[in-house]
Amino acid sequence: MDTDFGKPAKYMHKIEKAPFWGARKLIRVSAEVSGVVINENGQALDESDRPIPGLYCVGNLGGPFYGGNDYPFHQTGLSLGRCYTFGMIAAKHALGAL
Image (tube, helix red, strand yellow):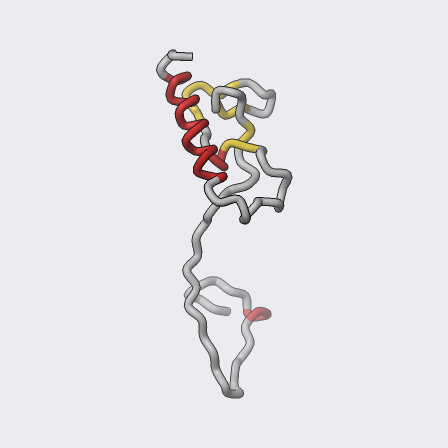
């Protein structure tokens, strides 16, 4: 058992033969592609599709916009466009301007 990270013993394997290699990986989330179901104002919806008062989700967090695991990496700026557009819509709605 790896007590530092809680990994069970069945996943622990001793590495004895060289060469030894390592790679530094920085983990980040560049996009959330499923998201919380929202309405046209960017309001988060509950399980009955009713707006949750005061809760808005913009950009890729407001979904579903993509069909699953088909996030289009070849379309630069698509995520930012959704952030700007739904951010403005949500802000105007929250301020009563829509």
